[in-house]
Length: 614
Image (cartoon, rainbow, N blue to C red; front, side, top):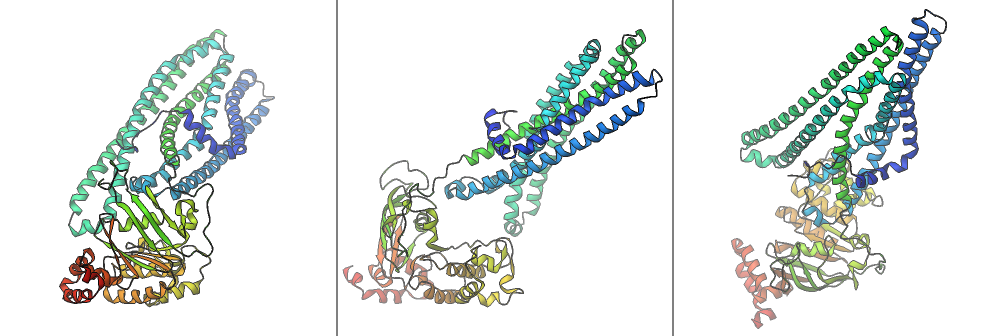
């Protein structure tokens, strides 16, 4: 069962204390709302009593004098009740919106601090639910639950006290229906709880189905799965509808049952109270007041039954939200950080680095979980280093560790002689510009996606960066140029255009260290030539690490590292590695076999010192 379906206890003191902490900054508003609730409850109690006075002292005795004064009091009380209700509703709704804002900012801020390992094991859709619907549920708690329930309770106790004060025997008769109310309310709570759980479960399934299939719509249409997916969604949606219909049944029974019970209480009051009026033991005004009090008596009972569901769902939502907020931030800045020399030279050292995405089951080099095994290499300031290897050899993992998306398990990584775990996280990542194979663009303009909110990057710098990587060629053809809007995930741009924008972004930030992860694998040969020309300018004076499957993009690197199953097997220049006739030579041979360049490669490597050693 998904945690979307699980409901917690109706009341959890530990969670409620944490929730009330968000209410504490707005205690003045809560106090105003509470005073308004007290005033509203007092007005609700006063109205039937004024009717009793009007009947007993004026209507029954035919005394007109003073009746207009009571009528005026009644109108003023109605106006006061309206004002109190308005103040209470406005104050709590505004407070609820502010609490939602604070809570969402806390959740989103925490999501930004969590390491990538957390996102590896938690679906994005579930995290979005935490920030959206779960916070909305808590808004219902603060606006119509945690404070107003006190108003219902006060009104209920006040009505009972006034009824007993007016005539305790008639009050006992009126309260005779309470066992029926208790039974109906317990039946309603028990069944609605289960119904709510079922509905929430099917809502979660609908969200998951839509997210998966809308994201993969191109695959759905390509393999003609529309009819099959429609049938599956029809089944999920029908079950959600049926679950909602079940919940409607319980509401349809509960509220009429309360009304029937209220009518039964009124009938008992009329029967017993009417007999008392005829005997002279009860005034007619008191009987009318009793009838009005009894009608008001059942309203807070039904309200509190409804708020029971609000409270229960809020407890479940808060459990999920606080579980997220309690998730420890595994990667952060040290308590007492060290500082890099200014300016940084960009000297990178991997010193006997071991890493596994999951904790290894066994120690040593033969443990299959290790992604990197005793990896050591040195990237000198300004040096250009290429990294190659088969899929799964650990190339991208090196980048993840270097940028501290993950931390090494053994060994260390240093920049300018300082372990990156001893540096402020922002300082480490501020040294780099990263260009990935899968470019992520945000909704906004072309210029916004180049500068990424960095106000220090001027429009002129954005334009120069785009011109340097030849992105201006397609940008200038767009209707609004650099102000042209980018659709979600860059859907209106081609793969090559998005790649060029990512290069412009990297250049605009003027990094000390440039990292390229399969940066040219998604562009055509002509575009790659343009990018390669721009990269030669971009890499001047910068430390550069480039991961590539296309060996043509790294042939001019100062050093090439060859990884195999997480182990550094070869290193050297392009010509030196070809001369070794090892893994790099095989990769080169496989890549260029269809181009008739194997003999050229062999000839190129034959005269190298490495070839003679072989």
